[in-house]
Image 1 (tube, rainbow, N blue to C red):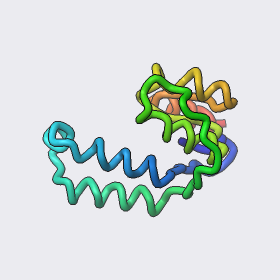
Image 2 (cartoon, rainbow, N blue to C red):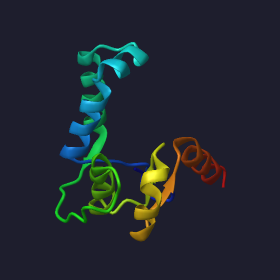
Image 3 (cartoon, helix red, strand yellow):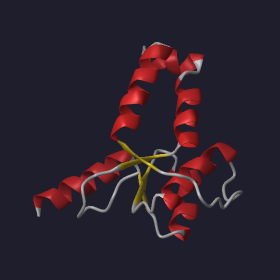
Image 4 (cartoon, rainbow, N blue to C red):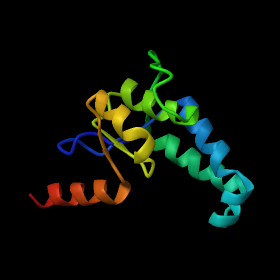
Length: 120
């Protein structure tokens, strides 16, 4: 999740979101695909947390999405007043994010938009 293009790029994180990242990224099939060990994944997540803006989840709008595991992504974006939600999972997140006025994009599209803005 990122801030508006006229602000510095910001990453938002909540405790449930980081725990979900850890659970998914340390699955055996994901460790094998990434070539990382579970401790290495945790080092990456620790680094991500260090540069993230912590978002306390004050209000929950559950259930809004078909996959309950996606709810914390939306809740973090909404509670963090995100301008963008950047994800490969647009199919599940896009409509709900737009209901809250949050722009959604795949990582490659968001980066392209940022680069376009930087050139102005």
